[in-house]
Length: 176
Image (cartoon, rainbow, N blue to C red; front, side, top):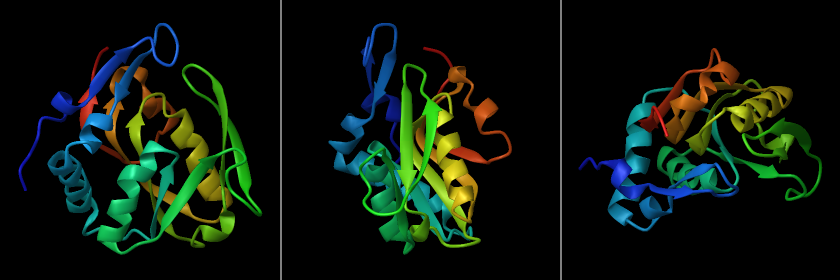
């Protein structure tokens, strides 16, 4: 498998979604099939020999990486969606983003009881969304055994919110 410098495929967009925020946009990875494939295969290589009962993904960009990974690994995909997007019985959790308040939901019936879940998103910043998602998974009867992000922003100190959970990423930015 050929390796790629992912930084070459991550667009930095200043002042999005509001002034003062530097947005790390992964859409250039998605438009480069060989690079996108590299990311999915790298994830599979990392988790191939670990017992994972399902992968849970954060809407929306987390879905893009988790879906091919789940198919590749032969495991279920559990969507974690924004408020009001899942029908039927849901569990919900409010949390703070670095620039807003938000709420996510999960179908607790989709979570394997006692399962070891890999939680995935495209980018890890403050860890607030992933912490809320891990709490939803725990409330649903499973545990988050690991977290994966394609990109991490270590200068946002996500490890504070996600203490005790192993985290793996493909590229880390140490400063803006």
